[in-house]
Image (cartoon, each protein chain N blue to C red):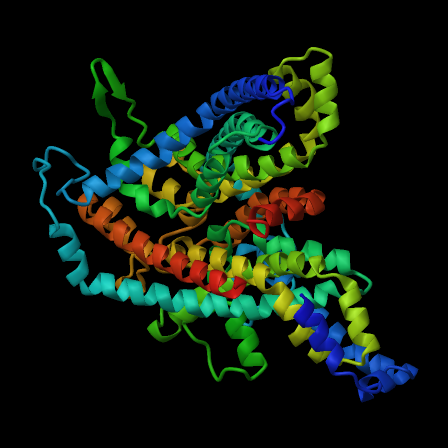
Length: 310
Length: 313
């Protein structure tokens, strides 16, 4: 402002030219994004909108059985008062709490072990990818066979090692069925959790530990004062991913129990309502409830992260 | 970060007993022993179930149902594998899974790499919004849209002469619905790879008069080829393993994918009373060994790809 003499038009023209180039770039970028956005809109956004709409109707899979009409909150009321849904929600929450905490604790131990220098470390990391690469359905089948009441290795080994007095029907017995489902998930996912935490561990600068060593801090002190605080971002992200995954568990319970009523998770309840009963409207309402529960967890985690950042 | 370092520094102390213990050879062995036991436990925990699959697959069906059970196949046989691989039901499922997972992977890579080019190499308003949308899509609960997809796939009227095709009980239903999780994931990870490339190469190409599209497929695409392989493998594994949609949208046996087939497997010698576990375990080996081999082969890259999708999120 003070120097009126400076050639003002030149920079302005240059800026305009840059914006023109920028506008062209923006146009091209959006053009490149069109296919992806179109697919996402078609396979996700539209179905989601349709689900919300269906949850207010009596939509049946076999159309023509009865005309589809708007029934307001009727579906939501039905699901809300359905003891089977309540049971499914509680069971899913139990499963989530058990698996996520075990996977986190075991995963952290494994990550710390694999992070230290020893011969065969590369082999261990490769080994940890094996459970991850096995399809969940297949993993569940493997464990179903291992947990077999007469020919299963778990019973055989347990009896031989005097860990259990006699063979158990782990999967069909209601008191151990949730535990056996958790065991599969923990086996399959713990190594993956460990790998995520390991990635977080490797980012921690080594000189912090060297400095702590010089100052004579014990390994335990180093863990509580250096490792854990600096690992917090990786821990939180891992917990978010695992929690969201556990809340929508379907495969393991389906393989283990089919449609057994006392072992329905939220996803099984929804799937059997929609595909089994053909009651699409009711299933859609349950889906929205499930969506809200998952969203609630996301909000809790995000606020927790925010609080921690401050 | 500073608090952690300061915290560690304030607790200065003379060499602890543990450090003294580690200074003599016997002590060092004692010190290391729990560590190696832990390593061995982790090793067994991760691999024993898979060993058990191998053991059951190579054990003759009759001996599988003998008690006490043996921990090693004393008379190893390939009979279970032969049964599985000659069963047209299972071969059909392998083919279906390959077609579905292969198509989903190719579509995701083709469409996703173009989007990643835009998101990784251009500056424009709305970019972070698109990126966040893609990230949130990767944690999207697929079950939430099950009902909508279910009714969509039975075909419906869009407008005028255009109808949505009837996809129910065809591989197309799976290819269509699997894009929900493979495409956003592919876009997200490839964007990371695109962003990591240096700017000079691209600039040199522009100076030589290349168009943006030429820059894309002649300069950038070859450079991120390793990333494409990794991302493709991860997308392939995700599609290969998917079960919820496959179980819901496929009705006829000759359209079954591998997970559904493994679940409903009734071998030639199987009957209503006895599940043919030997053959199921052989099928398990056939299905998982290629995945495990590919995973181990690309181990380092997969780790990078997975953690790019998660830790940097």
